[in-house]
Length: 101
Ligand code: FES
Image 1: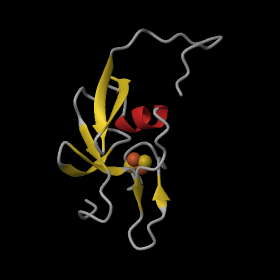
Image 2: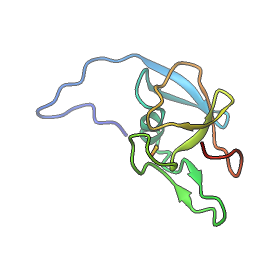
Image 3: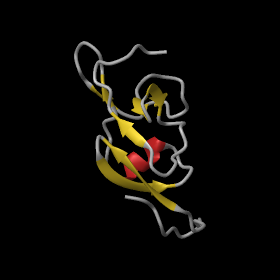
C-alpha cells in the first residue's frame, strides 16, 4: 500500500528493514515513522482508548496527541508517528497498560 510510481514525483531507492508488531514480521522503509510502515502494511488501528476501548489511529501525525502510543523495544508510550523505524524493532500494542506521558 505504498505509492511507488507517480507522474510528477520520484522516489529514491530506500533500504527496507523488518520489524515485528505483536510478534508478526512486517517490512518498512528504514527511517520512516513506524506508523507509516504500519499503514503501508494495512495496520490502521494503533491502540484503543481507555474506558470505551475505541480504536485509535493516526490523528495529528506530528507527536502532539496520544492516538498512536505503542510499546517499542519495551519502552511504553512511544509516539510511533514520529519514531523512526530501525531494523529489528519490537513494536507492541499496549491495551490498558502504562500512563500517558
Ligand atoms: S498521531 Fe498524534 S502523537 Fe502520533
